[in-house]
Length: 321
Image 1 (cartoon, rainbow, N blue to C red):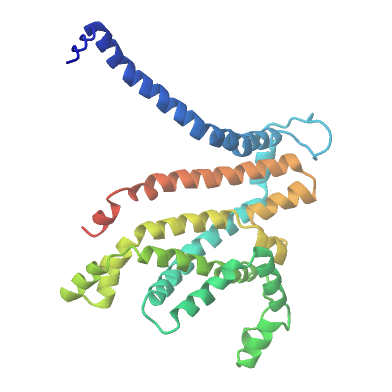
Image 2: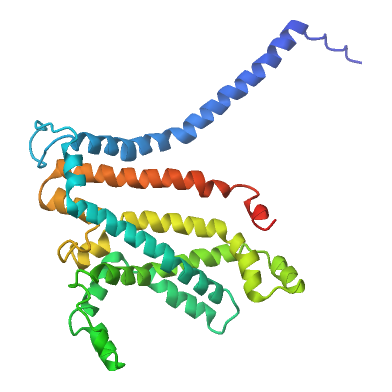
């Protein structure tokens, strides 16, 4: 029979117990450094540093060539906000964002609820609705630019169905061009919203619909009091993406109208490119870029604080409680 091992000294045992938590903390810190370090370096190099450089350039009157010598302080910002064109561009972005929420959101919800039902050819309908989103912005802009030309496809279609009185200069009328662009944007991005909402509808438990039906609720009451509250997190994400996309709108506008006619469709991004790259006003363009970033950043923070914050664990159960 082997002799029992001698007991470990009490002081050594206590010392080892103190070392274990410290060792775990050190290992956790090492893991965090290895996992987060590369991401933080990339984020700083490709996000924070360019923002800092843009802020620095915005303080100079600079055409992109030679050293930065003409320091003007905040004059570029004052010129931007003092110009009617830039203020109009901000208004155009806001109009597009509001129209997206007021028109595109109900339309997307309605079509998503329709395509969520068991319909014949539902898969084909979903593909047809989603197909425009697959096209690039450049291709979409060229297609619609050709169709909206005077005596183009749209004009001939309206005349063919007896609505020739509705024919207009779709892209040349200053009072109409922004809404024409919004129609093109709706055609392009509606499918994305529908697919996003359809994914959200898959998370609605069918038992809740069945329970509402057993309680005598009509289809509209079930949709109003059960489905839509449970679809809230998806709708809030859609609103966030839609507003940010509206504020950063550029491709379609630039290709179809260049911001015209008479700056009637200029957005902040097209105004930035026009001054920064076409007129070689890189200092002024940087100031506009900083303003655009600040608007998007503030909106994201406010929306995160007051809208997206509720979408945490337990939000779904609270929505129908």
